View 1 (spheres, rainbow, N blue to C red):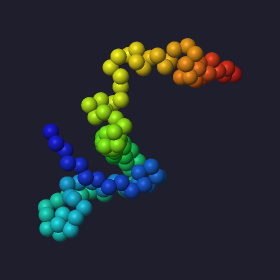
View 2: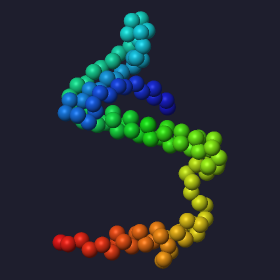
View 3: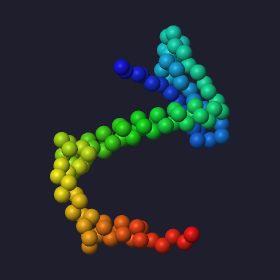
View 4: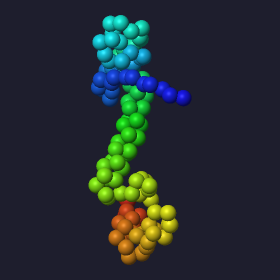
Length: 116
């Protein structure tokens, strides 16, 4: 399944957000000659939240891919392992052993006194 989404958000986190969506491209042909539709939803914060969440999901998905590509181009990451994860858990759990910096940082927060 392929979905070709088109939407425009104006002030999606404001009191009066605007969502513009539909089948129309934002082009002269779409507005002058093609058989397209578009709806403008103004002031519906729930609809704006849904569209903004989808925007952020797509943005983050493609931004991650772009970062991996740039790191690979600079030789800083192997594209065959874009998640930067070690396959052997012992390679990354060692940094959390007693006395190591990351363990000390965790212990600071774990042992904080929080008054009731």
